[in-house]
Every structure is written in C-alpha cells, then in structure tokens.
Length: 425
Ligand code: AMP
Image (cartoon, rainbow, N blue to C red; front, side, top):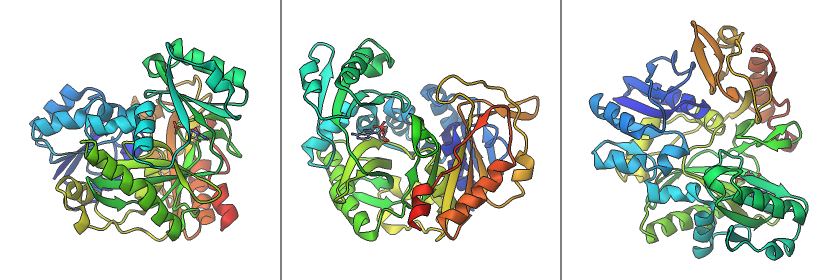
C-alpha cells in the first residue's frame, strides 16, 4: 500500500513515521516533508507544496496512491478532499464545507450555538456593524478573534476595553489579512485546556488518547501565544467521567449537527476545550485536523495501525476497529528558533541529531531542511523531542535528555513542559 502525507511539519513527520510502521505499507510519500521525513525508513519527500492541490492530485493519480492523509488545515479548508474524492482517490479528512468548523470562527460559533454545545458567549462583527459599546459592556478580560485562518495568531486576550476596541479595529484594518474582515468578540473562560481529538466517520467515532499542549512561549505558561511549545498524553485532567461528558456534550452533538447541516464529517476532529471549574467542557475552538504538537506524543502511544484506522473511517466501518494505546505517558518538547513566534533566522546548523537517534524516545522534525547534506533550521518550530515513561515525569526526563544533546545558534525551548500533570502525579 502506498501512502501520501500532505504537509511538512512535526505532525506530518509523526504521521509518516507511524504509517511506515504498518506492515501493509510499502511506501510513504510526504509532500513537501522535511529533513526528518527525508530519512525515515520507507519514506521519501516529494517536492510539492501542501497548498498545490492540482499537483498533489496529479501525483496521487500517477503513483496510484492508496491513501492520502492531509496534515495541515489550509488544504482542507481549500477543498482538497472534495477534489480527491471527485477524482476517485481515497483521502482522509473533512470536505470543504465541514472544514469551515476551523476555517471560520464565526461559522463555528454559530454552529455551536445552533446545536447547543457549550462554548463562551460571543458576538460577531464586521467593520460596518462593529459596536464598541458592546465591547465596553463586557466583563474583563475580553477575547477578540479574527474570523479566518491566522496561523494561531488571530486571538487576542484583552485586559482593558480600550485594548479590545483597538485590537478589533486593527483586525478590520487588515492586521491579519483577510482573516480579520470579520471578528468574534467573546467571553473569557477560566479553567484548564485539553485537546480532545477523535477519528470521525459521520456518526461513528473513535476517540484518540487525550492530550494537553502548552501554547504560550515561556515557562509557567507565560509570554506570547505560539503554535504550541510542547504537549503530553494522556491528559490526567480527563477522568473517565469527564471523558464521557465530552463525548456526550461535545463530540456526538457536533457530529450530529454536522450531519443535520448536510456536512457529514470524516477525518481527525480536534476540539480545544476549556474545562470549567464545574467540569463543563466548553469548546474554545475546533480544528479539522490532528494537532501539532499533540500528534507527536499521541502517535508515539498508538499501537494500532494508523492507515487501517483511516481506511476504516473512509469505508464507514470505524465501529469495527480499535486503536490500542501504550499505557505509558508520552511528552514532547518543541525546540524552536530564537525569536519565534516573531521573526527568526533560518539556515542554522543543527548538531547532535545522530547521537539523539541512539537514545530512547524519538526526535520528530518540523521546520528543518537539508543543505549540502547537513540538517539546518527551516522554520519557527524546528524539532519536537518526545519521551515515553511510566509517569509524565519519567517521559519528561526522557524528552529533555534528547533536547539537551541537540544544539543550534539561538535555540529556545521551554523547560517545564508537562508541569501541570507532574504536579498532579
Ligand atoms: P484559538 O485559536 O481559538 O484556539 O485560541 C488560541 C488560544 O487562546 C486558546 O488555546 C486559549 O488558550 C486562548 N483562548 C481563546 N479563546 C479563549 C476564551 N474565550 N477564554 C480564554 N482563553 C481563550
């Protein structure tokens, strides 16, 4: 069986690595991939950008790809799944209409309200109907969000009403490009966040292991928001009782709502949840794909056959398969370029990878490239070092043993990934 993974980040390295472990798989092509997928057994990179749907389609048809798995959201929101299915090519992910759950925050909020799924109170505005008086009437802090995809940077938590109004106006003025033409102003929710990711096939659903990520750049969950600086699985916050509440109050109503709206959903569905002190699982956001960096620790724990699970979902027989999880905890530490999430340099030589490959755990590449046969930095989030252990603390120790042997100029990483879970252990 031949697989195509679309994307080139850490999540895609983990997807490719996991697919390559399947005995049914002979070859995994990664478009465009990174320096990690370039050397992974059974894997090879293809020089096609993740957004170039025409070229991906031609490649999958020419190479008779048996299954395409889409990593990032942009091609999903742009309709890659509809295009592949129309051409008779097997692909795992939601169609364009269902992917609006991630592609438009205003659409997602209206969907949540319509289907009575718990979420923060909100109002949506365009420049023409913006009402500063509404904003000033909200309790502080208040959250202002650009409507469209903004690479994780379209959310601003404002401590004053003046900041909220000026943030909204900056979004209308084009701070986030087209993503800010519409905005959502929403109530700030206190609590702890968890990532709840499932494989969905219309009304059939296979929950994946729970996880928790760290979005802020600095230790103690401080500093600017990022795409994610680390993650671990399982999330001890999610007890069996809370798991059942999330399935009953969020996941099943969401899949029902999608079907009732005429957009049945197949693919990874990611609910970012804020668990209120009373246990209410409020939806902060939906993603229409696997999380990054959640994919790296979650897939480290998956025992089941990933391509088999995806094909079962596509065929509507998800109820006949099980995932199977390593009982141990997995924890991933993101190593980022200095300056990230703002401007950073590329092309820095990375050392220590060969030594790290001999240690327990796994280093997944994200923003890396090959230059004259050497691995250099090629993005903001560069690597994710994942450890396994009987406790989160043991997994953390294994992950940091990998991190400490790897260097480049101006590398940065958090030193406390998993601290909430370790405090609970
Ligand atoms: P989003 O892109 O919607 O996931 O937002 C990015 C991050 O902002 C989330 O992971 C939360 O940490 C935070 N956030 C978003 N909305 C809220 C909210 N209503 N209350 C508190 N924090 C929020």
